[in-house]
Image (tube, rainbow, N blue to C red; front, side):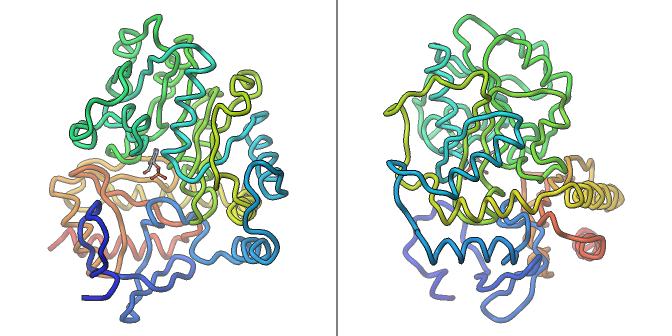
Length: 375
Ligand code: PLP
């Protein structure tokens, strides 16, 4: 066993058989020199592919100038990234942190301060993170049970059940928190009608775009395809192509609830990370988004034709194939065959490759999966 696998790490993840040492584009290399096709992208993170030249150059240049100053001072990369994200959103103010769960903590706190209410509507099967607040709004009992009691006031409704959504609404609800596509809970896209109903409830609407954001679904924000403008958006995974970052965006018209001292983060807005994230935002143009949509359709169509696939669904390059066999064993067999992919719940195979995959890569992945699923 390798030194890395032997390391004294708390067992919060299952044991792994592979140690990756290099990455380039959509290819990963293990310590034995074996190549893998990466259709996981570090769990929907490395959107532009490993060692993307523009992101690498931006991070290197910033490493050579200034690593850290704290949020007691301004830095150019954080300021420029806030401007770029505000422009993409159409007028928003940013809070930077280091992960998706922290971005959601910030959203939960922001909604409490802005509305004076602690009630939240969230979805069954949702995933918003592992810290106490984000876990409280995560609709997966298996992830919550050992840590109860969590925050009270969260009501869970089934995804796309408009009647249940209306029934859950009350005076105490200040926030509705939704993932446009439930990334960890089975790759379940929300319908336009459901999101419109959530928008109309009279509470703040926060969209957790930690997994769906930054081009993953074929638009910069997934909400662009849903016909709504949320009050709050959280981003993380793909934003800096693999460097740790999280972000809460608050629409200009509901901004102003936080005052100095209400919230903060020592490392949030780190100049190197923000410089990388700015390069990511610059690289996500209409041509790349069209490329994501085209290759997403190709992948979805190919999956629908495979054995053991009950249903394939998703948006852009966030795709789930519901199987009639345990997904983890398919993921394990695919890894042995040189394809890295993910599960999303017990019976959904999840594919979230770098956004830059081309048709040939998609066909190679489908060929490997065909071979694995035919065994
Ligand atoms: N929200 C969503 C939708 C996610 O998919 C995840 C992670 O998978 C998180 C929040 C938590 O993000 P992080 O692991 O960066 O804390």
